[in-house]
Image (cartoon, rainbow, N blue to C red; front, top):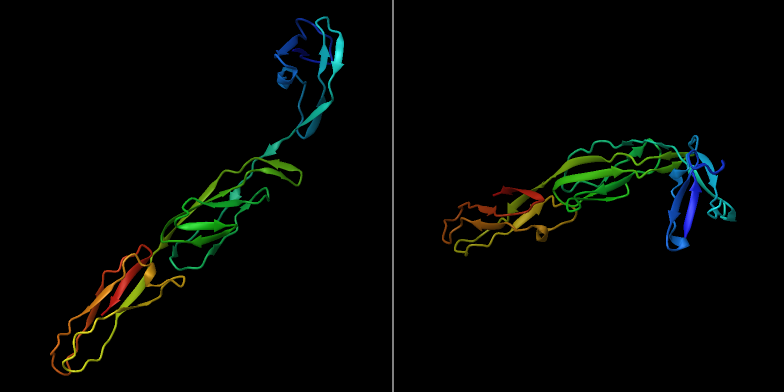
Length: 238
């Protein structure tokens, strides 16, 4: 199948000034026409243009006409995103609610690039772990109030989430002369998000310097150490 398309369909064929451009394929459904081969005198943004393909034989006689098609040349406008800086946080802080906007008034999308540290739902950023959090704000473009907008340049904001300070205190014991040494246990203050000692990578252990047979009235201490967690720092009270 061969299709011949004049550079300007409104004028008669002329081998020099208005020649045919030939598009061909083995099957009619595989013929692809390139509209750029028709030199329109001017293109105006936001205007609709109509066209129709006519099928002529080699002598220029019309054989059939296609249906009228149309397209609109749209002028796209740039847009920008406004996304406020995010301040550093501490593990255990509440979720962060932010409100990025686009100059197009189209909705901005937030995405976390560090989901092991922070996640995003809508405009709410939730802390998952201590570390470095990176959030991207994007707007893919589109139509709003009769104006078409290009995709906005991505805006990235970062902030740090510091570990939370956890106080560990060894248990106290009242002993009678001759008692065996107790086994002190740690107690904790200020866990985040209803967490417990089971959320620590390594729980602290406690020891005492009491020796069986110490004199009556002797004061001894318990000492705790060894706690490990990426989300907490440890302060030990003996």
